[in-house]
Image (cartoon, rainbow, N blue to C red; front, side, top):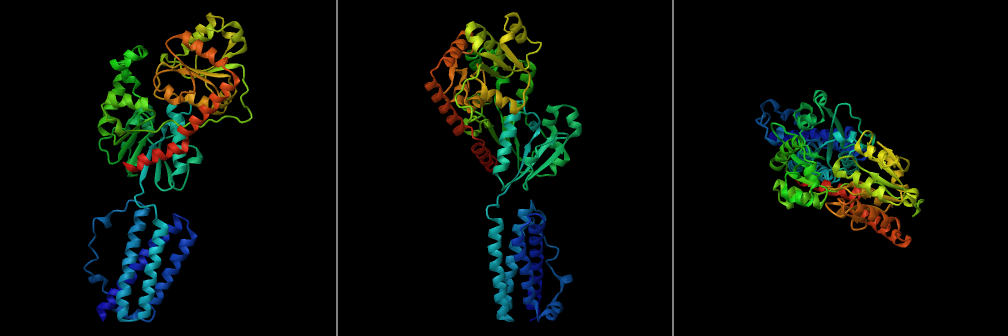
Length: 512
């Protein structure tokens, strides 16, 4: 009988210890008062098992001579996270309750029934606490571009990652950002942490931080399962203990030496920079050999990436830019007196094509429709073109605007014009369509895909074609204009909804 008491004593102690671990995690990390109350009650129920046999249990205890006290399995030596700890301790408690149920039958049938009740209560609690959490991952995110709201990378990161964190309460997220970047308070959730990294790395430039932040001890100590980089620069550590998922927005820097692309889009050759080509080519070689999954933003970009990097299209997922601008219901279809351009000043963005097309408009049409340009044109050839052609009185230039001002400009425009020569996506025309504005854009690359056939299309290499599309759009009947706007808005809502795209992104991150 002494051996039986020794078994009971060991399993009562094991059950108490496991319940204490579970109880403290529930109390201090998960703040679940109702589950905590049940666990606390269970610990008191255990006392009814030992009541009346306490002396026998203590006399039977031989902890110093226990042959199992120094034997640990590999699984017992490592715990990944609190969920892993909970799971291990539920198993420990349930097994102990089962042993007690059987051994107590030799001493007291009522005590055996109590152990059985504890066991089934634990089964129920385990399901309640851990259902849907097994297989949970720790996902790291390079959040550096949260601090760059005026860039395409910044808009993609802020909009999509914010939606992802609002959607996914199951997995744990760690946002890695350079020291000094202030991330929005709205991102802070129970399953989200922010880890600032690399003060010295930051001093050597943004690219240096992107390449080497994963070598920092604070990153390594997080032991992330997956690292998501939402733009083109992959970290290049000496050793990679995680799955790498990266969004390659486009491979435009490589296309200037790609005959297939240059024949169709000669502007790519004019925009070729050998230094940029060299750095980007190095990054993409790393992506091709080390990325566990590639994401891109359009079917057009996927085709480019597959061809240039020699990656099967089936290995590239599309998670497009989310569009978070919306029409103002009070505005209706009322026209305002300006044409709007939002974009960069690089040759590929084709601001010069916009200016030349605007100069071709009749004086009467220019008088009725000024041009508003959101781009840093001061001191550039674009400003000289405006001045030498007597257009300064008709054109308003904003170097930079915040999101509130940009939304206002979109919603009050009569027409949005964006005849880019080459785009991997092209967010501005999608935003304009979402705001209920007719759009003139290019008939090539990703832009028909982004606008869904509901824009007015032009040949971006011919200013006369841009001019004709602008005139066609401004003269469109009110009935057709309203239908085009409504169809375009529905297309944007159905294809570039932040929540739906965040779900696609989550599915990719948890599947690698």
